[in-house]
Image 1 (cartoon, rainbow, N blue to C red):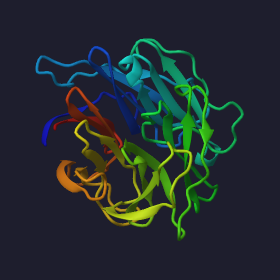
Image 2: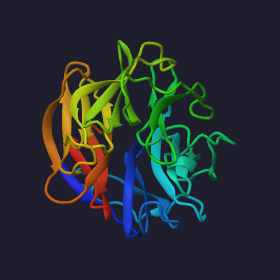
Image 3: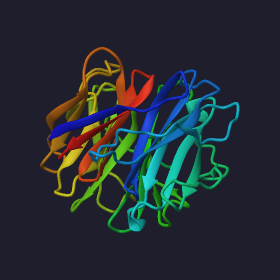
Length: 323
């Protein structure tokens, strides 16, 4: 694999974090993130930028960001984009959270039927839900071979001592969701933000944890039930991860390979598995050195890997990798 290009996206706010990226017809890319004075500040909103390939086929030019969330006195968090492969990416859903605190999150959505050129008004994903958020919590959902949309979700209790992961499933393309039970573990551990893939054995997910390791769970029935979660050999610094399956069966994983709770958020690296997620080899570093490079969002598009991530909490960077 080869790192082809890295581009810093324009920003209109002092601080940014938690991006998501998707491919839409054009070809083009959409990227979203939350930005404001600082994470959890009342002025934090969701922002979107668009890019089309330059003369070299790279996504080096991005539009000025536009605000995607309705202005309120509550912070917005963790936007997630899903471009439906059944319509070639024309149907796009933007999910995001809103709330003064994580435990009070509610999930809102906006939908586009033209590849992100125009959008519906925002609405609550699960009206009246008071659980702390539904649908994807950080990473993109996946459309399974059965036509189900499955999203990795999680909740946190008020004092932050308990994190519990679960999965939301939709049979109607993301209009309505039904949730699984919380994941079981053999010992106490905080787990959030599942990232999903599917193979011949079913659905699988890797999760962020506070134990210094990435954890895993598996489902043989399309996400209705899940195995007891278990630790892997992959290091985790208690920060976000994301993965995507490649057409040849390889699994690409973006993470900070640092094995300590609340460890450094550098380097940000790309790991690849050739055995169904049983083991991973570090292929390259997107970026190294002092600073925070975190919360990757990873997709396969235009015959390459596209990774967006937080760059020092000041901008979003998008990296392109030849596979």
